[in-house]
Length: 612
Image (cartoon, rainbow, N blue to C red; front, side, top):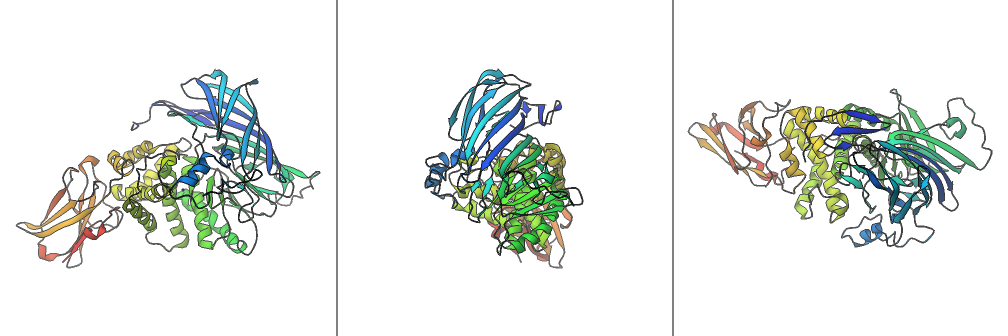
């Protein structure tokens, strides 16, 4: 959104239903299969539903409790989200004190009315946005239980991501609307209260039936199973859709192998459907008007183009549909879909669509835990967004420049915290968003400097092919890049992710020596990095000296388009200076520059170049 090192894998890769268990240093995935039926009252904005959840415990642990997320309970005065928003130094402008001011008919709530496991009632307690469930008997390893729930909810007035009656007039943005099983992984339960950040869910199958006023058009996650009964632009070509017998329609969706389910609904939605040559159907839902129609018409051509580009760059998009839905409060990613505000200029509309679409790779399919590693989703997504926008508009020769600038502002602000900080516990929203979005993108862009662009790009595809649908963490990503490059990279993670140490190198001195020219470089910042040092001669030719770190245990290959490498000397990180001896005389040198490619995130680039 706009936001313990593993050794090589061992053991078996075993799929159980749509979940997967992994015999690799304790790694596993729980499996879920949801079946839900929901009735929405568009007059009261309240809904009731039933949920049958088949839950498979693929862990080696015996579970005596389970936890559900009840996200809508955050939208009540006095909730943790409300208090946090009113007390943090730099509140989200979309929230501030709006939750505190909600009236009873405007608040959100989500309550379990009953809950059974294998037909027998269990005890549960609602603790704001978490339902704590004490099981009458434990769930043993490698067993499946059936949990049956009756629930009821009220859709809050649109405040953050989800809700009703947005500023653009969208009736329903139904995200985080159902009781959602919390994730249990090798780190235990992740029953985090909802105070405003992102989400972490289990992959599973969803079958959802939504009964709502027949005038409403729905779009979001999943494949509609009864298009020729529903109509509203879903019906097959040439089909005459029968008129509904009553006042409601029941929409039947199926979504395999996803970790969430979102839907938007409005009687004014225009539904455009585009069939791509690779079999993917792209849906757009928006309210026509002076501020939307022209740009959303153009968007129809650009969404498929973005899907094609990102599939080639980062791995083939694995689902057969993607829905762009007007709604929400900005832009937010969901399985097979996104909610975006729609009254935007064309560049803004395309930009938010591309960003949320890019999340399909890093949030939707790789699905890193965003509470622990928000930068692995938001940062990687920002990196991909920058590349995709440059491809679409063919206008930006340095697409990552904005991310570097955002990181520099953060690093100089005094507010920076390590990217290993839990997303809910950053001291300021500024520190969180700048780290997650900007520094996360720089992490990936700068990795191209460390490894070479081609190696990094191959590593991204290997990362996708290795870890899709498996919730990778930072160590998993680093291991993939180590395998692809042959280099050791733990130092890069420790410095750039787990600390706030910054990079600053300088050309300290260039002078004549007995053998030619002596160039002395210095490390001023606390983070060591390999260096590309380019020497430009007065005749216009260039050569490069490459200085990898000793702790890399190797070197990157010569990059295409870079000056010929004439010397390679490893630089121990303990040494603050390094002197290079060149055979060419000093009077032939025009300039010496560290990293003319500008990929090194050096906070003080002014001292990176000397000219004569």
